[in-house]
Picture (cartoon, rainbow, N blue to C red):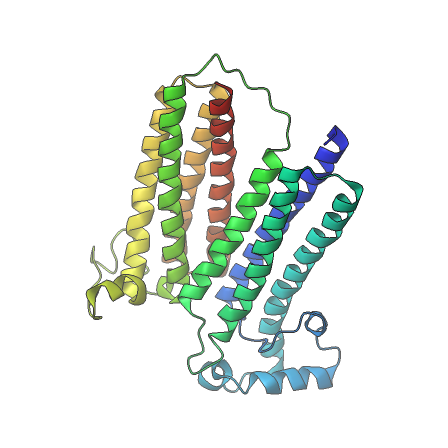
Length: 348
């Protein structure tokens, strides 16, 4: 790939990452406004066209009334209120279609013009496959809330969020790989880089587990209870935590226990990141990598504070959305750091 082709493909990857970030933010708003079940069918082409007149809106509203969310939670809702929740779900799906177009049209152009080498082409196909899987997973998630109980499965919600973060992460990594970087291999030791690589992978694993329990917390509306910190309504372990059988089910099904787990995991992640930063501080590595480790620590601690604010404000909409966006910011800074670690290690 010549410099022009590299820049074009790199910009394409960055545009994908930015659009996915925006879509996750809108997805958070959709979730917090209980808008996700307002569109009860899925159509790739016709679904891109919203209701265009009063008759269309009334038909869409009547369709919504056939499902449990209206019957059990929103009975008596006005058409204006329905339009408000419909907007966010429609925007979320519209962004998904836009991401598809932003992927497919440049992909076809780059492929025809020979911009891709074999490695980049494989990566493009990986993104294509993950994007298709994510679209399917979104509809599978919505379907889980259209029968009997008007809530989407928190397990499917977690998978949907993880797929979005995986897509975002791959786009960022692939973009970073297309920069021309010159690394000084004489300023660091392989042992230090190997140790830091292990530390950072440990932080990532804890972070992913924390994201899963964050999705469980959102899916079970567990953030709306125990809105005090550091205790949970005066208790360090909420009352009735172990009421489900088998006992392990409490960790993934009981709202109080799930929020408690989210707090514990967040605290462990914060402590692990402080240890990770200290290892970077004392290691024989380039100053830039140490600076990136400090930024990652700062973002991780900021995310911890955002989590506290989300709880004590009873999941106020803005706080909840910023907290979800913060998780993607943490992932971005981790990738930014880890990409340097792997590139420096390869140059030693």
